[in-house]
Length: 131
Length: 131
Length: 131
Image 1 (cartoon, helix red, strand yellow):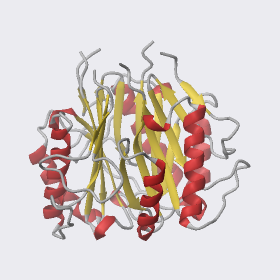
Image 2 (cartoon, chains in turn brown, blue, green; image 1 turned 90 degrees about the horizontal axis):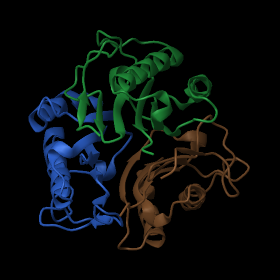
Image 3 (cartoon, each protein chain N blue to C red; image 1 turned 180 degrees about the horizontal axis):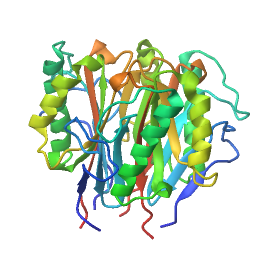
């Protein structure tokens, strides 16, 4: 196994304004920072919840890839909504993103506010099997 | 160690409407999805905060058991409240549930809203010692 | 590796009113409970967000130290704000606390309320490289 890695930059990663890493990789785990609907230039892109969810997930998966983890390594996802009424739309997106036999665990809630006034924020943990 | 396991069904697990797993087990860790006061048929059961906490914890422990983890493996619990004034009642329940020398770490906050208009949501992580 | 350890007491740890552990250490991981602006006697100290953040981080690092983990082991931090407008001040503090090449991953949101009416709560995970 390799030493700790701090993932900050990469071809498809949004520019980061905050003094944090997009992800930290340690041993066989990857801790991914909360991803929002931000484009590669670091600008927040206001949209419908589905548009924001697509962009946030696209960032999330780009960070995973840069960390050398696969979608199938995702074990836990934390989703903060601005309005829980958006859940059915996001559940539909989940069905498209994750195959039925590899669905991560998840927790959801409605925050009082998210950065940039965003509608959705996606945070997660990925772990590689060591067998 | 065994490969990744997705815990979706089991004798005492509530039916799940959402496209997620109740838990994902990888290496020696178990990531448990946010549990609510939902009965085995998947119906939300509105109650006092203690009634909801009992049902949510009962689901949480059923998921753990189905994942072949013990209560003593729980290392971290995230509790979202609808009203933090309910904390003392839930602390009392914690004293009953966890022996004084095996208390998990915890984080708590008041969300703006929880699924089904619930009063409490319990998410957690369990890890087995590998010695 | 050592068996699971429950960190409850220590020279610089605030007294804990709640039936939880300040941290749980298992294998090479440390799960730290949500830390607030509470002094060693366990009294909440209302302040500006920076004052509260300093005290909460001081508690967070004291718990880490008592758990025999270093600041550089921190891989993930969850920050709940009472008002996200406070983010720039906390980002400045992050720059002081974490060197540019060892910044943890992070997720942030605005909760509807935090314990004691606090302005900030800091929760986190630390992992030691096992190489």
